[in-house]
Length: 284
Image 1 (cartoon, rainbow, N blue to C red):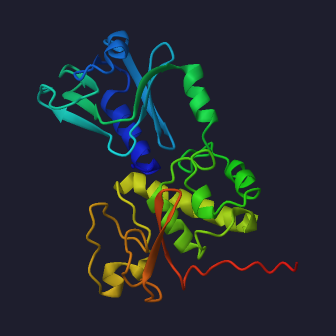
Image 2: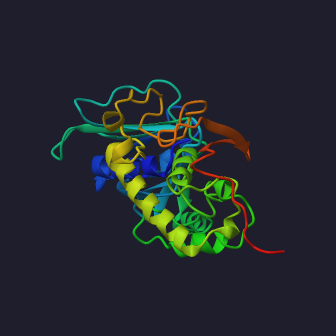
């Protein structure tokens, strides 16, 4: 599933391609036909992301709410000679023909679990159910901390709960915990606020870098392939990481084998030496 940096990058690309322009809206597949008919010819104001939720804003405080889910894609094509005929199951197409304002552009949405025309109030309700998004300048990490410090659930589960923290998926979860030497099963309530603030600051920086590059790189300079003289990572996900999808491989820091287990239906990845099991020092 795309993580938050992907949605923020997509929002930026949609705004650059169509912001302020009247656009043609269609649903070649037909599943968004009613919404497309209401929006066709409207001005696309801009797009924004909140965690893994994308909102494309049109005049009259109307929004297209998109959640890509596991297999959804939203491909934006700028500076094309002409808009081609749609291919495959395109749920939503946004198009602008070539004209005085510049070359043609189009964007095709496929496979999303959510594509709905919503009001401003409905958009606000979705946002209200979401935790703070590290990529938004108005985010309040204290909102996430209030949930974490009261919960005995594993921190590995809390980081993936979009009601606690918006935009973090399995990659950022695994890598953030490694970088801060936290075992994924450690109860949230055992963390200190200083630990959380440091994790938040790190997450803000890592995810902002992901928006710029379009990939997730989490290894520190001393652990890059060039610095270590090792092979670059080969994975369809891309990016240099410490533990994500590295089960059975040696840890870049200590050499111990990276481990995996399942938590709430998703795979955990960690190093048992760099991320030891938490042992409470409280006296019973």
